[in-house]
Amino acid sequence: MKKILVCLVLLSFLWFGTQPVMASANQLIIINKSTNQLAFYENSRMVKVFRVATGRKAAYTPEGKFKVVNKIVNRPYYKEKIPGGDPRNPLGTRWLGLNARGTWGTTYAIHGNSNPASIGKYVSSGCIRMHNEEVKWLFSKIKINTPVVITSAKKSFHSLASANGYKPIGPEAKFVNSYALKIGSRGEEVKVLQRKLNALGYSVGTVDGVFGAKTDLAVKKFQSAHKLKADGIVGAATKKALEMVWINQV
Image 1 (spheres, rainbow, N blue to C red):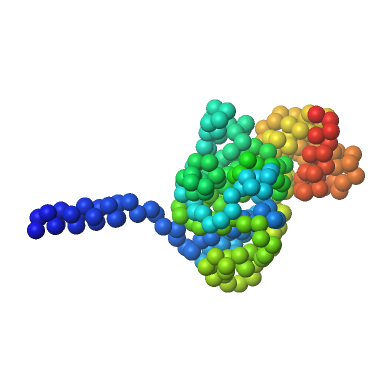
Image 2 (image 1 turned 90 degrees about the vertical axis):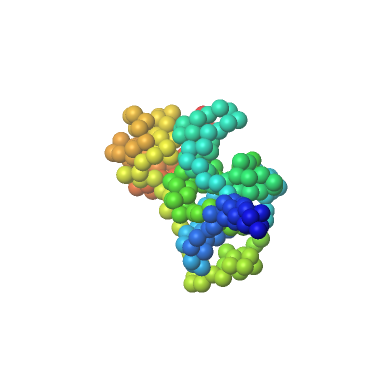
């Protein structure tokens, strides 16, 4: 009898002690490589859609149904021995590890990046890149074990969600390219902008990651010089022009 009780206790410990923390609030992430967009669902509703970067070759970013198995703030870039939080770190500030291709959150992930100009493109070695500020927001919402569907199917997000056993309600959220830099913006992306403007001769003064009056003036001068609307807002058109000039002159 004692042996039976001991066995039951051990089984109970193994069962409850090894169960992962389950995803809460009915969450789902869908990444569509055909559009390089990521949709976040919660409580059956699509909350937000983000632009992302994926593998520079189609096979690099794995397709299938995975889950978020770890969450790391400022993960070091071990390959080049770059500490976490370093502005040079290509993994950005947040890491949502996936259990893809036999790995367990160590190789494939949704993460930030040190090159905001890469977002929307096919440039990675397999991971899914986001803007640092946007992945911070997603990181704060996502629970461990949240399902992640990666596909290249030319279907709507709701259709893809339904095909994977999720029951979406309400309308699909429209992608809004809200990630524009302007007066008041702060962070590493602003530093990258400031460095490029300084190098191209549009002085912003000190590179401090704060989009203030000097950066605003420099942006407007750049926009005027390249026949763009001189509003001081670094949106898609200005980012594209800046990147082209940067590539050709530096």
